[in-house]
Length: 390
Ligand code: GLA
Image 1 (cartoon, rainbow, N blue to C red):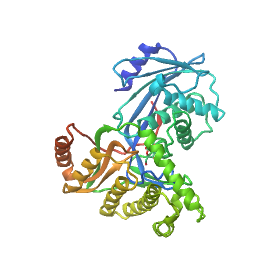
Image 2 (cartoon, helix red, strand yellow; image 1 turned 30 degrees about the vertical axis):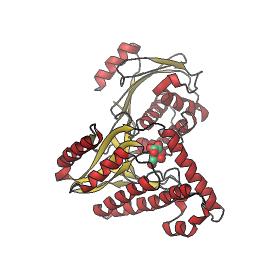
Image 3 (cartoon, rainbow, N blue to C red; image 1 turned 180 degrees about the vertical axis):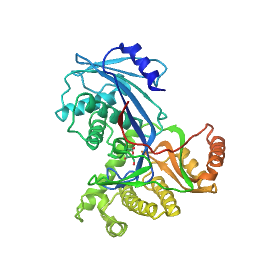
Image 4 (cartoon, rainbow, N blue to C red; image 1 turned 45 degrees about the horizontal axis):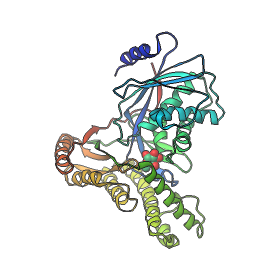
């Protein structure tokens, strides 16, 4: 949808005049470093060129009106700055409401409401962070429209995460909001989630492309299963802290983990911690391999990441394993793994450029035959982070 189309619809819904501003925040794909961001480890995501677009205009009263063009019915949902509580019937508007709530919690009280229209091109339920992009979009919009100059883009990522944790009840880490707010064209972000130190690493794959395969399944109870994983990792950390001076699982390397793992009595929690420790080390090694131009090594680490997420962290599912197993057998595939929170969603693969079309054709056909419905494929373009558009 173009800006002109969006603006026309905006004016039809909310009326024509005034200072209507236009914003964008991207989705993300994580190349490696999964379920490490709330374990004090490293992640390596990049912002996508797809994301969520929004038009907004300040009101003179305290009303908040939201409308999304992603549903067949164009429904305007109304609330107010005096009613910032999560509500089931508020649906997707709980995300922008949560961000406004988090701004107010930080002491940024808004003096007037807003009329907000959004449209996004991140496939629904794909795990490519449509909700984080909506949070970061809202933060970007508020910062600009209300002249909140002392907030940085990194602050907006943290506010988005806080709104998701405390308003929407999903105990996510910082990765998705950080990637959406801080993304940089053609680069992935090597982020230490313990310190928030980061570095942009150019993704130079010479004769290969990043391809996302969407399994088009999203299993239920994703956020409760996610919160369970987080609790299990935290239990393991507390066990280790009885004998070791560590702040997070990210402080340990593989040898230190192996030498001390018996301090974690519960075998499930031990497996979760093993994943967190090994995945963090794999991420550090993968970034080094990329810098050295060793894409093959990067791919091997992606494959190992998948096995660990499947067997130790147990966040994969049948459909995703089918996509990955099939991809591993296709010549020209350098690496393939589940990406994002898990329990459905997408895989990310590095595929030699000259076999990308064949990869999509073969994997698409084999997946349909085994699972019964089509997968969807996107060849990734790495874009910039959230911003005001003209
Ligand atoms: C979800 C969360 C992130 C991160 C990933 C797993 O996307 O929002 O914070 O934990 O899962 O790596």
